[in-house]
Length: 590
Image (cartoon, rainbow, N blue to C red; front, side):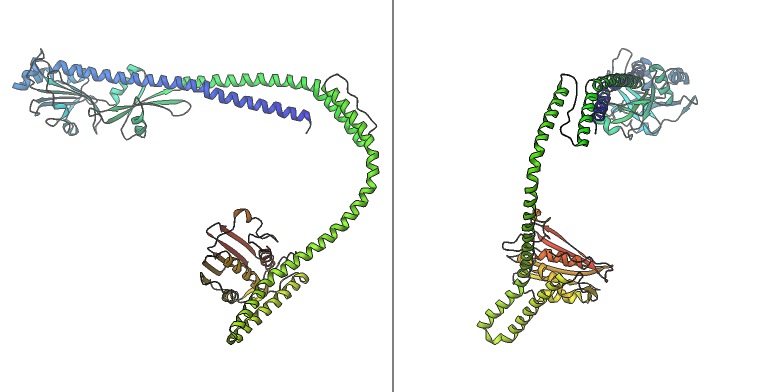
């Protein structure tokens, strides 16, 4: 990539990083500042709404106190005269005082007189039974012991939330004894909310205590919470508790996000102006760099390229100036001069080097042939190790127990036959390109390999054979060597005893064979090279058994995998076609 293009990328990346920094800075500092201002403004609006609601409650309580500490009321509880009701408890009283409930109780908690009024229809209605449940003897609203006692607050009724005030009934001078209790109530309904909204110039709503905001409000301190709805509206929430101190209602104040919108406009203008300034500065820097550095470097590069095409180190580059670029041109000329002197030396060494290469090539060919012969001999030694060990053990036993000669001679004959088969297979591996596949009873082959394994008594064996294993296309002798290698490795992995499990089952068009042990497992770092020739984790091992297994299984059109965990055991899984494969890759010769 040319320096000019790199410079463009660097400047573009700088502008991108700069704009990203501006964006993050504006959001984390400027915009968050506006959001904080907006949140504080909404909190003040919620507090204003709470003050208006508190003022309404105070007015109700003041009215109740005025009526409760009045001689006429005091006498009414005693004589229950009708003139008091006709003069004071008319519909106009409820309308003027914005009352919905007036209840008179004597000192024993018995209702003397009560009236409920519906402002919407301007008519008297029955007293809600849900309110009377809160006015039982000795309840909070009917338990004043002193003349100046009182209870005011909120009760959440099924009909509507109710602002309520309870005062003891005394004489006009406040003296007692207390003759009863006066209850006044005002519904916090849509009409009352509209009045409060007009007073505060706010959009108010009331939600029940089951609203989703309740858990968060209970944790807030104070119990006010602000949450944006979208880019246009934000809502403030406040928890209203009832006279018992329990969550009663949630007051919501909805406002337009004018402060946030102003913040967005400010941030957008700030980012746009900063990007425009950065782009202008970048263009000026690019022009200066091109005039003072990039164009001169391009000229120097073009001259060096021309010298390279002509292949004549006697040529020289020409760059004017007295800075680093002209100094670089001088060093290039010095290099060309040394290169010209070196060419002659290179020509002198060329001929002798060619002769040396030919000699080393002949030595390498001889070494490769020796290595191939060594690998073949190592494979023969590895495969013949098992039958030779069987013959040695049988001869040793025959010398000690001649009476068992017949069975031992059969064992020796089998080992000799196995050795001959190994040599014959090796000859076929070298001469043939494909295994000789024949329909084979795989279950019987596995059972025979496991029976002739003769594991130590400390190792328990288990064989699980499924259906569909009697007509599997195999080269039986080669596949038997695969099974012998894997079973022998499993036995050697459990020197202190363990469990050896062999299973085979047909699944669809494939046969899956698993050989599992509970031995010491294979180190993780050895798994990648496990199937490579001469790679082994056993002391004194040649590392050819698993390489042969992999090559043979793949020659049958299958695959072999291993799953091992140190200290837990190892499982080898062989998957081969259940039917004769149409295409089988030839085995790779060592």
